Image 1 (cartoon, helix red, strand yellow):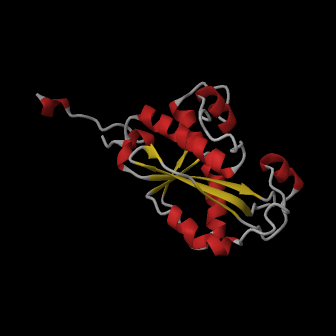
Image 2 (cartoon, helix red, strand yellow):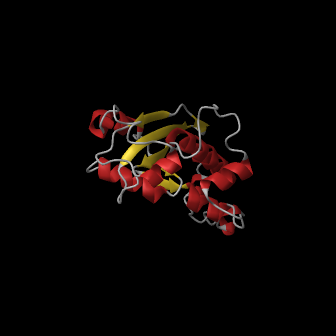
Image 3 (cartoon, one colour):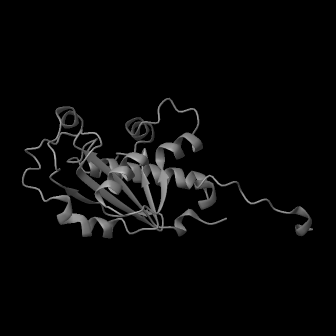
Length: 191
């Protein structure tokens, strides 16, 4: 069995403008190296189309808030550097990965771990698997800076990183984290 900490991860969260498909407004990336959660990096960017009201109600960012922010193209190299880990982690990962693939033309994500799917598999029977519910149940926001708030990329990426470490520790091995069955030991070889 391979210790899960032998692989380096980056936990990502994106906030969108409410369009379909969503355009990027905010992105955060939190490295998890050797099982240790690192410092978050984040970017606010001006989307190509305005932020819809209902998106503002969720994350609190309006078009006015990002009017003077750089375009995604201006931060693209920094984002690619932040994403340069062997594995990406996100809660409900297909959304975040989809936005990143649209913004980073030609970029293919490395191995992806979805904390929503992992939580369902490793912690069956929970009342809810929404990130906010899991944050409450496991006190994942404890000790975070007070200026961070739910539904903002840095907060969500940090609590998702904490959730991932909790789930990975519960899984014990990289194989179990990947959902691979444990290797069968041939008992005849042992005796």
